[in-house]
Figure 1 (spheres, rainbow, N blue to C red):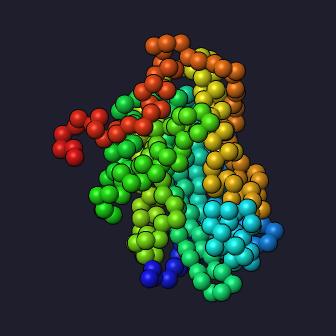
Figure 2: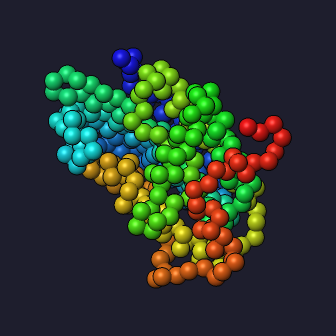
Length: 312
């Protein structure tokens, strides 16, 4: 039987995590700061939404904290878990989406979230979810290897099976079925995680939240100074369309937020500021744009590509 969750400790951690993300990303950007909107949800709860726009590194960056609760889960939110129909619920999390200006710097997403529910008969459940993933427009093996190496090393203290399990889950989750292609190069993703008990699962969730920027910012710094022109920006806007499609069609957090009466502006802060679609467009053969789908938007064991010393 899992030990009892401490929702107040989770909330304190998430609020502090949002503050740390905010400070680090403002420093990394160097030109713009975050605007904060505090909001309340009709029916219970609220949050803090922070958005940075028109920066030197980020065209737009959003960091959202939300904590919502209510006497009854929305029916649309219980389709996959019918046993929770009629339950009191509490959900909280921090989500972050970074849309860089330079097309050579990848878009990235991270989140840590906690959910608990209590049925009218007294049966209760809780779980953690989260992870992080990377969505490049122009791929670099060095970046993909470093990203997955960091994810592997973060997971390793929790078991040798954790990284391959959560990498596979990420590959499966961030997949556009109607396009038959991944959203990006993956990372780690987990949901409904409670099997380790509260203390250990919360420790893992903190490791994910605390470790994210150490994985992402070195990649951003390596690529932010690369020269680009309208060709790369046009391709970036086109590929951002795939990001929009995933978030509006498949993303579990987006759907739950909208179904549970969350603040629409905060939920949709994950969408990029400029995006385009082109009818039946395909990149030229052997071009850098073609390499994205041919080499990078495929399920790959990037750790097997790592030939550095003392690697597993």
